Amino acid sequence: MLAVERVFGVRPRLLDGSRAVQIDDVRLSLEAGENELCLIRMHGALAEYLAVYEVRGDIEVPLLQAKEFLANA
Image (cartoon, rainbow, N blue to C red; front, side):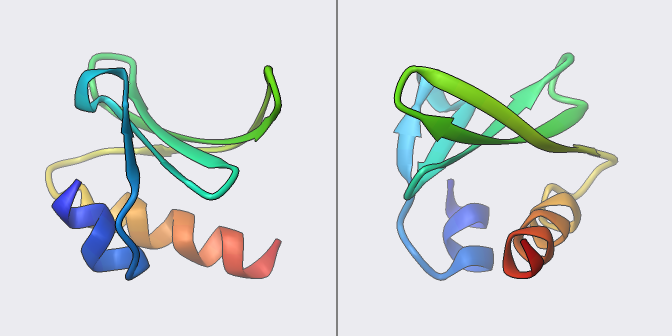
């Protein structure tokens, strides 16, 4: 959660026992044994998967990729 706040500059809402956070209508979720960061846009109860980033070591690298993707979307 601290890394998300550092990269995005806002305090995210914690979901799913710290495996996912939400910023506005976008959910960032660690999946596949915490080896993938999924970027999901929430439309009410519906989820639209936007992108998946591989996590290798430092979580900030895929978080930066997700932030860049959202800036260009």
